[in-house]
Length: 143
Image 1 (cartoon, rainbow, N blue to C red):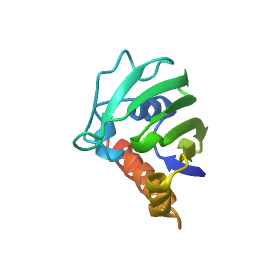
Image 2: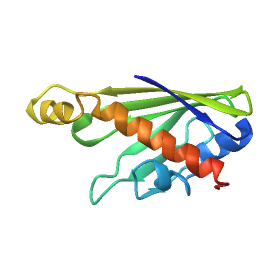
Image 3: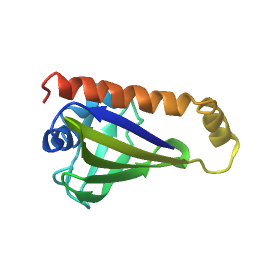
Protein backbone atom coordinates (compact mmCIF):
# COMPACT_ATOMS: atom_id res chain seq x y z
CA UNK A 1 0.00 0.00 0.00
CA UNK A 2 1.29 3.48 -0.85
CA UNK A 3 0.28 6.64 1.02
CA UNK A 4 1.35 10.24 0.39
CA UNK A 5 1.35 12.89 3.11
CA UNK A 6 2.30 16.54 2.70
CA UNK A 7 3.98 18.29 5.64
CA UNK A 8 4.36 22.06 5.62
CA UNK A 9 7.94 22.05 6.94
CA UNK A 10 11.47 21.80 5.49
CA UNK A 11 12.63 18.34 4.48
CA UNK A 12 15.47 18.22 7.05
CA UNK A 13 13.05 18.96 9.89
CA UNK A 14 10.49 16.43 8.65
CA UNK A 15 13.09 13.69 8.34
CA UNK A 16 14.59 14.47 11.76
CA UNK A 17 11.13 14.29 13.34
CA UNK A 18 10.34 11.02 11.55
CA UNK A 19 13.38 9.29 13.06
CA UNK A 20 13.06 10.88 16.52
CA UNK A 21 12.35 8.06 19.01
CA UNK A 22 10.90 10.55 21.52
CA UNK A 23 8.30 11.70 18.96
CA UNK A 24 7.35 8.24 17.63
CA UNK A 25 4.94 7.43 20.50
CA UNK A 26 2.96 10.58 19.71
CA UNK A 27 2.05 9.43 16.22
CA UNK A 28 2.89 5.75 15.66
CA UNK A 29 0.47 4.16 18.11
CA UNK A 30 3.20 2.83 20.39
CA UNK A 31 4.04 3.59 24.02
CA UNK A 32 7.79 4.07 23.56
CA UNK A 33 10.94 3.07 21.74
CA UNK A 34 13.55 1.21 23.78
CA UNK A 35 16.80 -0.69 23.37
CA UNK A 36 17.97 1.29 20.34
CA UNK A 37 21.39 0.04 19.26
CA UNK A 38 22.17 3.41 17.65
CA UNK A 39 20.54 6.38 15.94
CA UNK A 40 17.30 5.52 14.14
CA UNK A 41 18.51 7.37 11.05
CA UNK A 42 21.30 4.81 10.52
CA UNK A 43 20.98 1.50 8.64
CA UNK A 44 21.50 -1.50 10.89
CA UNK A 45 20.12 0.13 14.03
CA UNK A 46 17.72 -2.12 15.91
CA UNK A 47 15.13 -1.04 18.47
CA UNK A 48 12.05 -2.27 20.31
CA UNK A 49 8.61 -0.72 19.91
CA UNK A 50 6.65 -1.08 23.15
CA UNK A 51 3.04 -1.40 21.99
CA UNK A 52 1.37 -2.93 25.07
CA UNK A 53 2.29 -5.48 27.73
CA UNK A 54 4.25 -8.31 26.17
CA UNK A 55 3.71 -7.01 22.63
CA UNK A 56 7.13 -5.44 22.04
CA UNK A 57 8.27 -6.15 18.49
CA UNK A 58 11.88 -5.60 17.46
CA UNK A 59 12.47 -3.40 14.44
CA UNK A 60 15.51 -2.70 12.28
CA UNK A 61 16.47 0.22 10.08
CA UNK A 62 17.08 -1.48 6.74
CA UNK A 63 18.25 1.60 4.83
CA UNK A 64 18.64 5.29 5.57
CA UNK A 65 19.69 8.20 3.38
CA UNK A 66 18.94 11.38 5.34
CA UNK A 67 16.91 13.37 4.44
CA UNK A 68 15.36 11.43 1.54
CA UNK A 69 14.90 7.76 2.54
CA UNK A 70 14.10 5.76 5.66
CA UNK A 71 13.31 2.06 5.43
CA UNK A 72 12.50 -0.03 8.50
CA UNK A 73 10.91 -3.36 9.17
CA UNK A 74 10.36 -6.03 11.75
CA UNK A 75 8.27 -8.89 13.02
CA UNK A 76 5.24 -8.60 15.21
CA UNK A 77 3.04 -11.08 17.04
CA UNK A 78 2.54 -14.50 15.47
CA UNK A 79 5.29 -13.89 12.90
CA UNK A 80 3.57 -11.02 11.11
CA UNK A 81 6.28 -9.19 9.14
CA UNK A 82 6.05 -5.50 8.28
CA UNK A 83 8.09 -2.95 6.37
CA UNK A 84 7.72 0.83 6.07
CA UNK A 85 9.70 2.52 3.31
CA UNK A 86 9.39 6.30 3.53
CA UNK A 87 10.68 8.63 0.83
CA UNK A 88 10.90 12.37 1.45
CA UNK A 89 10.97 15.03 -1.28
CA UNK A 90 10.73 18.81 -1.41
CA UNK A 91 7.35 19.93 -2.67
CA UNK A 92 6.08 23.52 -2.87
CA UNK A 93 6.64 25.04 0.58
CA UNK A 94 7.11 21.76 2.41
CA UNK A 95 7.87 18.07 2.19
CA UNK A 96 6.02 15.19 0.56
CA UNK A 97 6.29 11.84 2.32
CA UNK A 98 5.58 8.78 0.20
CA UNK A 99 5.18 5.75 2.44
CA UNK A 100 5.10 2.22 1.10
CA UNK A 101 3.74 -0.13 3.76
CA UNK A 102 4.01 -3.87 3.39
CA UNK A 103 2.57 -6.39 5.85
CA UNK A 104 2.92 -10.15 5.42
CA UNK A 105 0.79 -12.54 7.44
CA UNK A 106 1.98 -16.14 7.85
CA UNK A 107 -0.41 -19.00 7.23
CA UNK A 108 -2.46 -20.41 10.05
CA UNK A 109 -5.70 -19.89 11.90
CA UNK A 110 -4.58 -17.12 14.31
CA UNK A 111 -2.77 -15.21 11.57
CA UNK A 112 -5.87 -15.53 9.40
CA UNK A 113 -7.95 -13.94 12.15
CA UNK A 114 -5.43 -11.12 12.54
CA UNK A 115 -5.34 -10.57 8.77
CA UNK A 116 -9.14 -10.31 8.64
CA UNK A 117 -9.11 -7.59 11.31
CA UNK A 118 -7.04 -5.46 8.92
CA UNK A 119 -9.04 -6.04 5.75
CA UNK A 120 -11.52 -3.61 4.27
CA UNK A 121 -9.17 -0.65 4.38
CA UNK A 122 -8.70 -0.63 8.16
CA UNK A 123 -4.91 -0.86 7.94
CA UNK A 124 -4.75 1.89 5.33
CA UNK A 125 -7.02 4.19 7.35
CA UNK A 126 -4.85 3.64 10.42
CA UNK A 127 -1.67 4.46 8.53
CA UNK A 128 -3.22 7.57 6.97
CA UNK A 129 -4.34 8.71 10.43
CA UNK A 130 -0.85 8.16 11.88
CA UNK A 131 0.82 10.14 9.07
CA UNK A 132 -1.72 12.96 9.39
CA UNK A 133 -0.99 13.12 13.13
CA UNK A 134 2.73 13.20 12.35
CA UNK A 135 2.23 16.10 9.92
CA UNK A 136 0.25 18.09 12.51
CA UNK A 137 2.95 17.56 15.15
CA UNK A 138 5.75 18.70 12.84
CA UNK A 139 3.76 21.67 11.53
CA UNK A 140 3.08 22.69 15.16
CA UNK A 141 6.83 22.83 15.82
CA UNK A 142 7.58 19.40 17.30
CA UNK A 143 10.12 18.18 18.13
